[in-house]
Image (cartoon, one colour):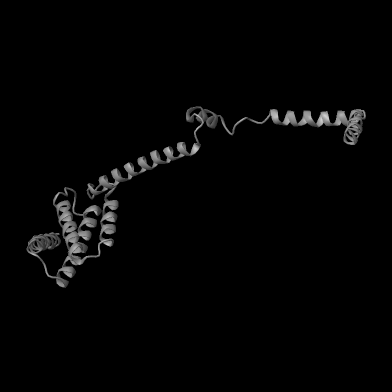
Amino acid sequence: MIENEDLTKALEELQEVPPRDPAVVQQNRAAFLRQAEDLSHQSVSVSPFNRLMGRFTNGQPRLQFSTLTIGILLGIFLLTFSSGVYAARMSSPSQFLYPVKLWLEDGRMAFTSNPHEQLDLRIEYAEERLNEIGGFSGELTDPTLATTLLNFDEQYSAIQALSGEQELDDVQQERIGKIQAQYQSLHENDDEDENSS
């Protein structure tokens, strides 16, 4: 019974609630209304775009949308880059992407460490320069022709240096022989042009 008496006393004390101070009530009410006013001017989400995207994700994490976006952008970038590389490799000396073509050739050469493969690449590039020079229809003073001739001379010098360092197979010897013949005929034509002028 003693416990019930203590409980009864405690409950009686709780029933006696002192009256609230009207000034404190008014002050707390004004603070609450200020906070409500401040919150009413803030948007519910960060932006209307994010709110719209939330409707399409059906409550799934945003990471999936971000991964999809990154994948699409990466795909577009790779497609554009590979198309640009292909266009550069097919460009001629008078076209805008020709310096990119020469840069790509230099990069490919830099990543080739085997001397036999380096020689094959130099032969390929020299043959390509000869085809470009043969298909040239502009004047001999054109700077694009001069650039192409200069690049051919560099390839030819590298071929001579590399062929002196290693044993050549029959295909390489035949291709180098053709390049040498065309190289000599090019320089003979240059000498004739200089003598005639």
